[in-house]
Length: 257
Image: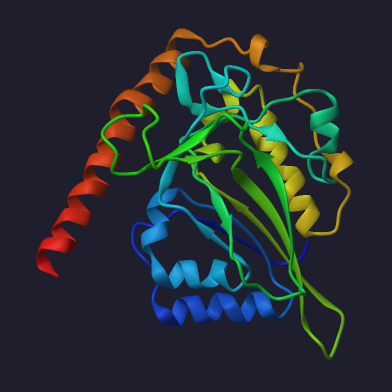
């Protein structure tokens, strides 16, 4: 297996030295999977790594009013569309659904190298909208961006002109995708999506994934009592707390500037 770096949301920004090491690794044909939440938009060194590959993480939370693309009464717990790619095709054909609690948009830079190829993997509906992470309400307001949004993308790049070296990245706008609880509610689709993504970085066929026990389209998703409580805690307590904390940090920075 080729070397693979898996990056989840860090507690604080990388140092410039760490960011440069990761950039050097990727420039030489490195493979990486990034699973990052909206707080990383405030980490300039980490964002500089993604920026070198044409994308960034937005400082917003995606709200999904389309009931086909979110759990009932849980507009921040997304069931995104799977785009037709070599990673997602087998799952999309069987109408499997990935579960994304609290996701943000993966934005494409206006200016990027022609060698970069960026394709969406998971997208929101056109009815979705993005709220600032410091917003006090999830209701749509004037100024909120409208969807669709890229929630996960696949990136390839050929940066070494001396030899045929291919860099591959997966960038996901959430780190909750990899939690056992989210995977359980998704019927195993989350982990299959991750395995297929890793296989793609390694040049393996996506067809080697292990299928979930049964298709789990939105209408078939059933939550146990414990799962319902967990999702409720995330959306009712954890998310508002994260938003409040983010707002306090922004206020403190502005006050001290």
